[in-house]
Length: 111
Length: 112
Image (cartoon, rainbow over all chains, first blue to last red; front, top):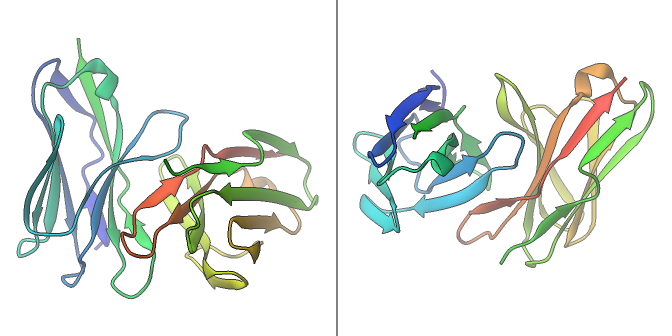
């Protein structure tokens, strides 16, 4: 079992819809979680970090964390074609400063 | 804003050459990281450093070494480049309190 799992996609949504991206992790003691956006040919860009159970909102983005079920999700409201990218979920290793990255979900927003 | 810069965006080297990739951050971060990213394999950690002159191996350290003589600078060294080291190399730095990692623009290295 991979430490951080994401569906590779592509997840295709129409413009204006809500895109829901999901991530599960295997280490129950993990405490810090991150979402990155990566456009093709570019480096990952941090979108959100979340450390507590529940929801955290930042503009059109909402991160949701459920430690009991070991999943973290990212909702993108009013999706735009410019949101089309690969979204990487990352979990901090409990024993070091490393982040463990999922393989990413490719999101395609159709105009 | 955190700024992480890398010495080159594109680099072409020959097999057997010694290659230096440099990374500089301006946020006084203690932690710095080197990754490579290949299609279908995702981000893979090569080495990281949590302090000057300190380093730890990541998941794929073979064929690489690193140097951190100053807090703001972290160098990745390919002692003898091989074609299987053709990849996108990404440097990141992080604040040890938030653990948020910030990436540089990347260096696309081609070894021929």
